[in-house]
Length: 269
Image (cartoon, rainbow, N blue to C red; front, side):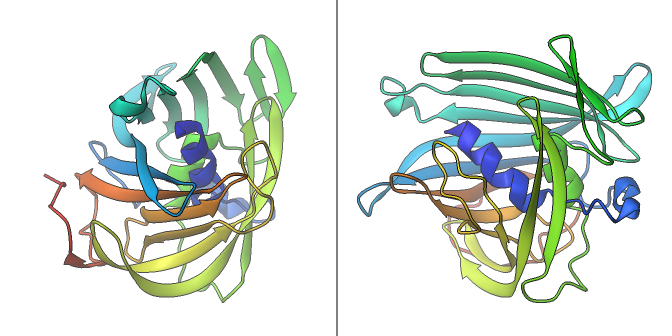
């Protein structure tokens, strides 16, 4: 389930136009060290959403080969009462350059039911290669992994986007380089279990797989403020649908000015 969330967040919040070289050096103005964000994942198969699990994203300081860096970590865990059906304990982490926000290293430790997988990828942005399991694979200018792309994209300025504009990206996963895009669907107001938000609405292009339907049927709502964090994600899958909702946060860099009204219990302290 957590793997699904990562695939949700990547195309929505990570984009990079190969033709726009300035995107490679976009400074971080969206998040701070110490930031933590929590989401609940809901699964719907018969018209009723069930709390299937949660995931936590965090930012800490680290270094890579003597260079100051950010460690961007995502932890996923299934709801304890469903562990007997399908237990999930996942960890994804990207170590990125604090100036370019491009990844030095990406690791993931997946434990989902009987499936277990560990992987480490070392990126060389100069030679446009990614090395994993002793093998080198070709990448492209400004290639991200699934976690670094999410954080880099939070620094995008939406001001000049027009309805249905598409912004393109490249990301590396599972030994392959993937092109994709997201479509800008305008601005609106939505009410979640957490609160009422002013949001930016996006639709990413999904690649058809074992769980997803291809096309841009997924919809993502991100805060219409300087933080640009997702507050809700909805998508159909092969059987049923998935909804992901923001439920808590700590140490945001900017005030959550998009929050118009708090609905649930405050979980951000």
